[in-house]
Length: 86
Image (cartoon, rainbow, N blue to C red):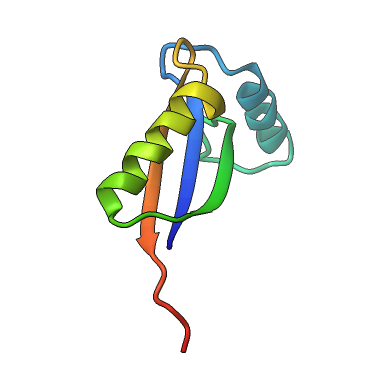
């Protein structure tokens, strides 16, 4: 079994008004040195598979078909093997 964490964010070319609003609030609170705030989505799942390549193929299909809008968003993921607890 594999633990998979998926991060979905807007592509750099897409305006992120929510990120800009949060960045403005951070500045109004007096925090300095914060820039390029982007808002995204995070998904965590456990995936059963015989090998990591099969799991990656499944995760990419899920991301392409459901979790991310390929016109506006990009994604990345981390895949970690879960050792059987004995």
